[in-house]
Figure 1: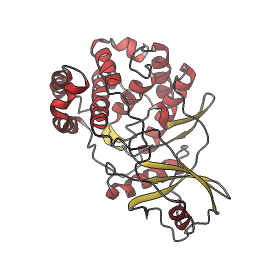
Figure 2 (figure 1 turned 90 degrees about the vertical axis):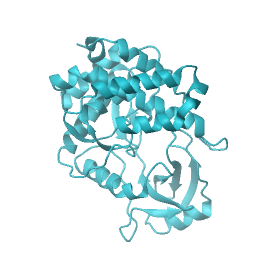
Figure 3 (figure 1 turned 180 degrees about the vertical axis):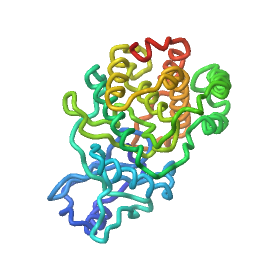
Length: 320
């Protein structure tokens, strides 16, 4: 979540008039995240999140995302649906951007998860994967292995401005991924971005999973690897927490499960996850406007994760 596009109180009031949502009481921009512009909107009846979709989200993909959320919610998953207006429309235009009024879910995101919270996140991911077995939608992963090459090329020599030698390190890792990526594993629609800040919790219980705007069709176990990279380290990429990793995998196993082939490939999938976020963070680091109300995130935090996964044993990663 972030704020790139400013929305006036008058514009919000015009939008809310299309809904049975009450009158605008307050609206506050949300600075966390890097993808879309988000506001916490409070009306005389309830709270919402207003999301304006910025350039990285293709407006043509919105029906897929909204159908995915509706499917997961109907299957009992705690996810925020887009609220339909009086005419049944979920997608509007606000301040020149496609926009949706989103259900507000209670809970907070944790910065330093406990093992119990990590297990709950793994269970939530496993339940979603179970529900998605019957979802018929599909969306290509534009930030999969092919996309990493394109993004690295776009960053170019500027990678070395972030850290000396980073361009060569990325090139070497891309070559490794090309040679070892396990494309024959089961595929499905996945979340692809299940960081702690995209999971809402009360105590040790998950109350909501949010931000599905990277959801795509991909190797299913890669979703577990993405979650592993974000839940099992300190935010700066140091301090791997084996207890969190074991709990996360145990929770996922309880709700869905990993095959032996997925376990064997897990280190490669985790390296791919670390490389993906290293590259997208590098691009954002180099290209975020100076006046954007957004918190830039350090790409080197995922270089440290990548280096860890390159030398880690399977038992340490999976808690077995």
